[in-house]
Length: 138
Image (cartoon, rainbow, N blue to C red; front, side):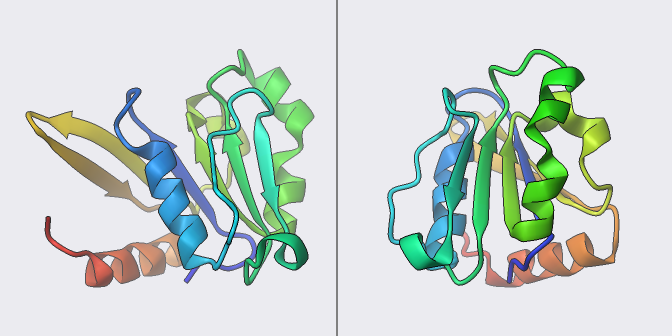
C-alpha cells in the first residue's frame, strides 16, 4: 500500500528486526535487489527502472548520524517527495520527519518480538489498518 510521500519509521534495539522488516517492505514493493542496512552510506535508493520497485523507495539508516544538523544535510524531504521512505533509528530526525508517518517500534518480549504501531494522521492510520488486516499470527 505504500505510496509516494509515505514515511515508515523503525525504532528499536539492535537485532529487533528493523532491517528485516524493511526487506519485507521492499519485497512488497517488488524490489528484486537485496536490501541491506545502509549504515555506512546512510541512504539506499531503489528506483523502479533498476530495482523493479513499483515506486521509488528510499531506505535511510540514521544510526551513525549524531544530530539534527547532519540529518538536515540529508534533505529527507527530497526523498519523501520522490518516493516512499523507511527510516531506521529515526530518533535523531524526529523533528524533521512528517507528523503523519507510520511509526513502528520493534522490541523483544522474552523469546518473542513485538511491534508497537503509532500513527499521527489519516494516511498513517490507513496504513496501520491495512497492516493489521494483513498480519499473520506467528
